[in-house]
Length: 405
Image 1 (cartoon, rainbow, N blue to C red):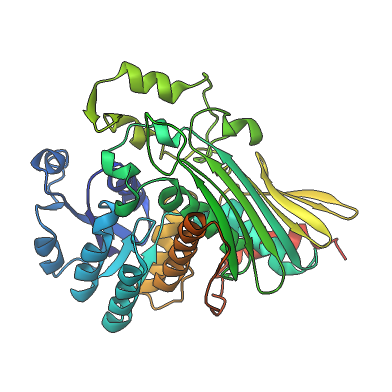
Image 2: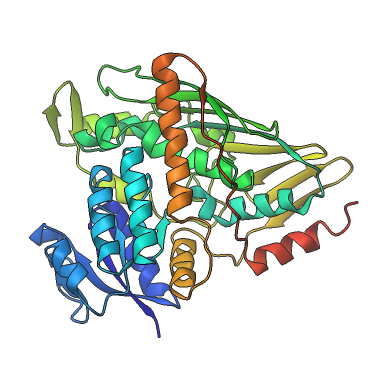
């Protein structure tokens, strides 16, 4: 029997999840919930789908096994805790919370209720990242020594609500985009949490104030390092670094400064010093394509080779051999998130649980603290989290690397 999922929040993330649920073999869409009548009205033609106008009503529904929380970041802690307390398993959009007290309260609620909190969607759910991790874990390339990531996007100039720029409400590129890069770095590093973080956060445009860029350098206990840069100012197209493929795995349709042009051409309202347009374009940015999902350029360097995404899959460049491992036939987009939910309901261990999401948030908070203090920040020692890699991916990697010494 399929697990019954209710979606809380019918913004772009909630709407994007619905078709993945409807196509999933082990999860079914049983309910939607939103405080806006017009949002619920969009699902009126589905008579078997329950529609709720309050979280309390959704939590009280006995036939709901799990809830996907796709509400604004500053509401995550309240909404997730309520769902867990009602005995539901939960998926929450990243970042899981705004502060460490919130993330720890959510973690405690998950433990207390004996229900799993899956934190995602994040890029390490994507099959390309999972293959990269499996290559590193094979040991064929020796120890992981460094990870380098670069991403240039139009994030600051996409249509947004004012709160999406407000750090206090979980807005800006550190909470919303570093959360992806940190997730990827920790996944590639086998679940390790950085020991030290040194970061600088940029607020470079008066028209769109907020955390729009960052640079960060991290070191792990074993001596491995990670260097990350992100700019959301719609200048250099990041797809120039990724063979013309976007973070959704689609070919990018290119026109310079598209986000800036569309923002100025569309209907706007003035909120403080910034202009904000409708959110219709944001949903379009979430659709999955046919290629690996490139969240900028991310290269993992081991003692005897480098690993990175290419349009055909994952390229392994070792001492004496180069090969590519395809992602064809592997689940992409929101499907792996639902796979983890189904595993959790079945009592199986999952990677992206509350502890995983809380550790990612700790690194985001360390970046903010480091930038404000202009100093390196040391994080508490934490045990590495085991990475759960599917048998299909492990077998594919083993076959591809069979000829390596």
